[in-house]
Length: 506
Image (cartoon, rainbow, N blue to C red; front, side, top):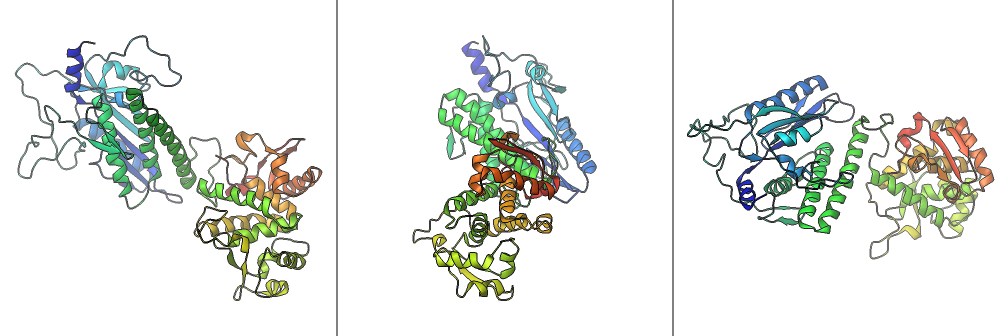
């Protein structure tokens, strides 16, 4: 490519790229929202998915009618790490640079499930190389001396971020609406300055626009995880392209973090809305909805396994429940029925042993604790959990998360069928351990490979030979199905009724 050709391309305006999305408003509602990636377009809320899809299609069609492809634009997909311009992982390296060609078109790509619609301004060669792309319109080179038809901007017509509405009382766009020569903008994204001389121009414009969109998202009154996941995915692609241009490894690391964030946010969105279209599991509304809460659950189980002052499953279960009650400040309130519900063999003697060794502090006797009622709870203190002067402690979650974790554990150990079966403390500890070590579909262990016996005997203080009766008890209580216990692993699947209590491994 000659220097003149490069210089001519750099003078051209970047191709436009936009997406219209259809998403659920929230759990338990049939309402949907229609959003457009162009900043000038406001969000729409519709009562049903059918009405939302019709509105999304109409909005997208209005964009296509309002945005004829410009012959002076170069391909928008250059900033998207597309398969032609920037070969990615797993794609064969090109022996020669990709050369765009043909007139500029508006290429349309739609989701097979009808949840999003994308359009981009690119050349015919790039449109042909893009999977599932269809050409909606083709640019026309104006005849010599012919005036370019102005873009009409008015009420009800979608506007692009590079267009401005005409001043009141005039029928024409402002002179800056389609500049003949752009002055390079300088922007900021992720605490990084986007260089004004970064090439290609489309990459620089994408980074600047993404920075603006992230800042606009931070000003939103209500979070929208679907929008945030889209932004993180775009950031991952843009930073990958930026790293390829500059050779900066820190940009590639930032792209990797953005990709991981997008996957986590998308997973959270599916958990909150019950949308499992992209997964194989059933739609599950979990008691603990945030992946960080699941990590906190596992951190508490690990801590208690190494800090229980007395042997045996009864002591382990009581220490776990008291730890969750006092984890934030080392202090909390307890009533007799909280202890009675755990199915301990001799709760009074156990409480006396815990106070006798100094692990637990009570204002009265163990008998007073067991006799206390909800209207007059007993204050308890666990000295080892009282934060030191520097405020550090064994756990990183805050005071709002603690009751959620405690409520989750209480729901597991007081499960109706476990109570009816008079399940032992060891059985309830195993139920807690299994609930915290599944995949999203309820299969035990990471990647459905099962849980190692090492993990089980660390969390449940029993010998390997005692695990088989415990798994039989959970199977009889409709908690576990198809269990297989080998010399190294326990495999199986939690039943559908207890999936809301699970904390999947990510």
